[in-house]
Length: 138
Image (cartoon, rainbow, N blue to C red):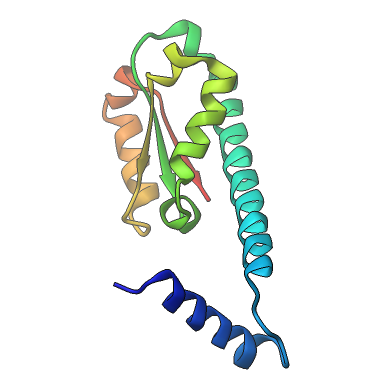
């Protein structure tokens, strides 16, 4: 496993050779870059949560059902951003509260090619009567 110093060296080498000429990486710049990445990824999570919130509100499933609310999520942003699911759930909790958040399940759809067909099959097979299903792509 690489150490933080090793990762810093690799990142610095990439900046020097592949990105910017005559650039010297400093700890201060790493801290700034880390902060920018945190802001961008937190905003992405907030926008995803807003989309989920709008769908849940529009379908009025909070007041009409007490079952689980299953949200199918497809996309590398959701899968690969560190702590994306936790950030999305934090925003959902802020909007809906803990009681509703416990009903919301974010399931990652791994099979990109069959998502549409699987979703349609689930909707018309009677599964829709048991759980609200929504598919989002990030």
